[in-house]
Length: 208
Length: 208
Image 1: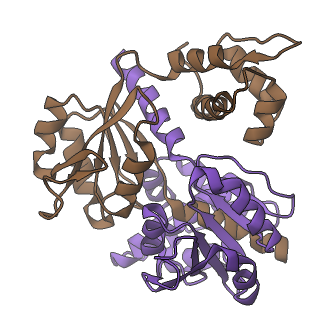
Image 2: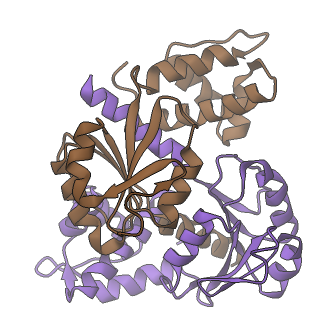
């Protein structure tokens, strides 16, 4: 089970999101072609991913939604849950805290960090903001394994280094500044400019 | 030049970002292996992408940064520039306006939309917020081709439909609710939960 490709993990996360939504609407079974339609991919892709995690539905009724949600949880969540910190409490940091609050029981944002004295000691959607200089101590004490970076460009590299020194295991970097981390730290980077420029390119192409 | 793969377009956008940063630091030439290192990819990938857009450097000095920035601009930007609207002025919408302001001369956020009377008529980082009900009129009058959606989950589908009816050509959907658009509208979806869960999965794997 260890070698599930990155892209499959992303899709499993997206399937679960879609399944939770269907469940909340009172649906109990779903076909691969329905999941495929929601995710804009092919039914074959859905079936391949679910076969990879050992799940097959029935021809007549499709997949059991509740069962599939639990199975995906067993694959992608950790049993004990993981703790997440947000570094940088600007608009984006606050948006993420609000958005992610109570969304996934196994992934909790437990701390925020900033260097602005006006923010330190305050709570943002229930999450306490600490001084960035206390990051090593808090990451250790609270057993935080994942950091989401939403800091200003010019502080990105310095803060990423501090996170690594503090023993963080995974970083999601939302700044436009790419960072380097040692091999034992998992890094995911997302810059919204890339997405905006991609849309703009295809729109231009359509108009031309 | 029409059939550049999606992934290449994303990388060209990222190369330009890296090149602009190097240029601002006074650098004038760069080797493929340097770009590769910043982007965490292979030098072969960089050379393949740049050959695809018809650019080759010299063995001795590498690529001319200014020239390459201009060439990437010719490929991914439109000559006249494109106008972008943000729909939903919560923390995320405001973060995007601030972040993107003056970043790319050919892509300007010219309008924001929200249904909160307290926000309508106000400016956010210089961008006027209009009532969502005025979207069709403003999109047409201001010739807006791209919309970035940062609206609450439960309004996503209705607002996407209104955007399509208003003649929008591309949508970047930052909500966790996947949408459907006609074939002539380009759609890009990004849900931060997917990225957070992906990092969490690999961190769990490292710890296990």
